[in-house]
Amino acid sequence: MNARLVAAAIEVLEREGAVGTDRLLRAVRAKGGHGVGRAALERALDADPRLTRTEVLGRRRWELAGSPPGPGAQPDGAPAAAEPDTRAALGALELRAWQAEALAAWSRTGSGVVEAVTGTGKTRLSIAACRMILDRGGVVVVLVPTLELLDQWQAEARRLLPDVDVGRLGGGGQDDLFSHRILVATPHSAGDVPLDLPPGRPGLAIADEAHRYGSPTWAQALPDACALRLALTATYERGDDGVAEVLEPYFGEVVFRYRYDRAVADGTVAPFSIALAAVDLAPDEQVAYGAADDRVRRLHRELVVGLGMPAEPRALLRAVAAVVADAQGADNPGRQAAACREYLARVRQRREIAATSAAKLEVVRAAAPALSRSRCLVFSDTVEQAEHAAGALAMAGVSAETVHGELPAERRRIRLAQFRRGRIAVLVAPRVLDEGIDVPDADVAVVLAAFRARRQLVQRLGRVLRRKSDGREARLVLAYARGTAEDPDKGGHADFLAEVDGVARRIDRIDVAAQPRQLAEWLRA
Image (cartoon, rainbow, N blue to C red; front, side, top):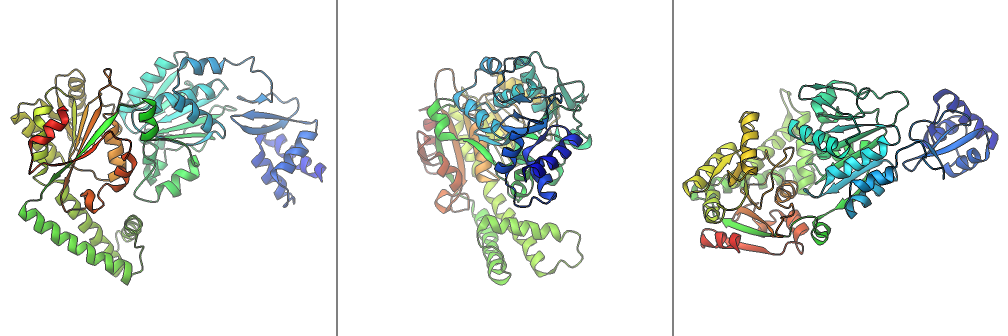
């Protein structure tokens, strides 16, 4: 029996060179060894002197004795005499305890997702993973969602890995993995150009803001040639099935999580407090919201009871979105598709009424007296709301500018630089600052609207959580329209608030309409 197992394995090794146990197990079973298990196969291979076993990041690989070792292969127990001192190199990176634990968890398999709150050092963790692979003869592809992050990541890699050629693909760069050992690329560029690896070299794919790659377009950028894979994100979730259908099959499971409770306890991020600032809809807004809400409820009953769709709200939204996508372009979409399309439209209408309520500007005006000496980020729902908020702050004597996608890139860079230097006290942005841009340190975040509750709020709180030199705390003001789906008393932002409960120093309620001065006093306290 053992002879047949080894013979089948040798046939593969003669053809393919160094191969992992899983590949050999498939070959053996294809040759008739249907009941053979991994342990039995490895015992048979270990006992045959014609084969040698190596370890690469915890994965066993087999090759014929006397074959030249592949890059990254190291016989069990043998010192890596010809390789750089990886341990010393990692020590020079001065990893935090959580980063070292996450790196160890990922390196056991060479694949997986690390979820860590914004501002805790995911970039340095990924550079440590690069160091491990580079020292084993490998190459690395780093996918970043924007040109701003491409510049930032390339500069940081060059600073921390000065002995490594770091190229770029996108933003005018046309580098590849044959001339550079690290290639930083945008998804658009990586999806258009096949990323080939130099022969015999292991490849690592790192995806920054990895939750984005669950969409069909972005998924095209994930290089199949890289067997080693690391996903980095603050919030590993999506509103569709992209995690289950795209990300998990490619990256595998979450191997490490670093959340608020430990980050605050470790002192990795600043301590923080949260104010829930209530405002009231105007009478006409209340009428429009009530009509939209009533229609949503009627459609919910029709979809769940009449058409048998899921009752759980998030599952229903995913199912509805799938039906609408399938019915696009159809001349006669049918009752279900029509109801689903209207349901999405009414949910969106209801959300937008609350998010863009005129009363949200009262939160900005109430906070203004405390913002002139702070660096503050205001997150709006639309460009129009951002412009109105910046105007209200300017009328109150606070220097404020907007940053949004309609501005030229150079104008955005100038305003971010002015904010970094303290020449602007407040930046107002509709979602563009959530992720994908290197935002200067700030002390206060005012959220006028959150599109996806937990994910956006985790990103936005993270924008002010970097440790302050004097130890002061960060502040998050979360505005909500009372009586709407935003209202915490009606389940608004429940996932996010559950995550920060017991971690935030305080979570206070402020009625902006009744006590407008209280918000500025809270920010100053």
